[in-house]
Image (cartoon, rainbow, N blue to C red):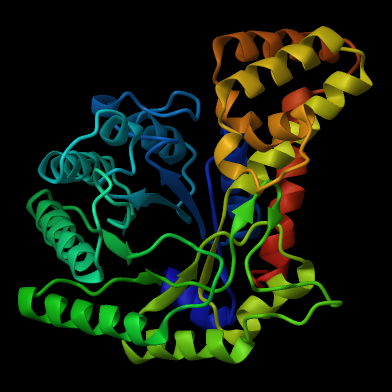
Length: 381
């Protein structure tokens, strides 16, 4: 369905991070309202199986997340594992597991995804294990081990699964075309030899990278600055994808301008991931309401817990001038499931109802507005 939709509409597919229950609900409601496919891309930190303690989004396990989304009866909403692989879970990195154990852990997580009726698996063994020197061939070896295992497991259990392959973290630069062709050629040979379906998506660098709440990649969307990454280079990357019959998926598309987003379907990018922006939109909205209606104690509590979580640190630019409130906005979605935050939010919601304000509907509206910017720019409607 997705391949046909993108081809017929000549559109780019929006794939959204399930940063919160409101983000999940907004994605499903937009899919049903406009009768369009939507993909929810869950990282292992956000949502994982019960064996790994679930994740920070609603404390959902893989099984609970799938059950919740399926309960809506939205047949055009697809579930995808984002960045599945060794050391993509805190469980593996915090316990400093070796290669063998971290690969076994990744396989177990994927098996839960398959049994929970996920539609897509993003196989991504690009994180070094125990600070090793990780070569391209070593990454491919692990990628194909995961590919073969998950494909065979899905067949044994009567499940249909599609694949997204990635061999490197988004770095904000352009794709190394020679290395990319090598990766796809090796993948094609592996699939033909093992009679495995070829991937639906492959991840490629398109000059995007998210830090704080801006896009800092070399794909410039400021009209005062000429892009350091030419559209011709991106089109060559897409050309390689087309040659091997796979669709290009870019990550870190958050915060780009409408002009830059509207170029995506024009040049032929097939799908784009957006995640942190939707969490930031919801956090900003919540803090705005707390401030506007005089909930100072609650506002301060949110900022205090967000700062103490240290979840903002990975997003900071060098020599950042971000304030504590900025940091809280950047990482706020990580603490939505904190028990103190949930209680505070529930109490504020009840109090606001006396003023005829539905807090959660308000926040969901803000998220939908943000999502609609992509849906419209990507020519999905």
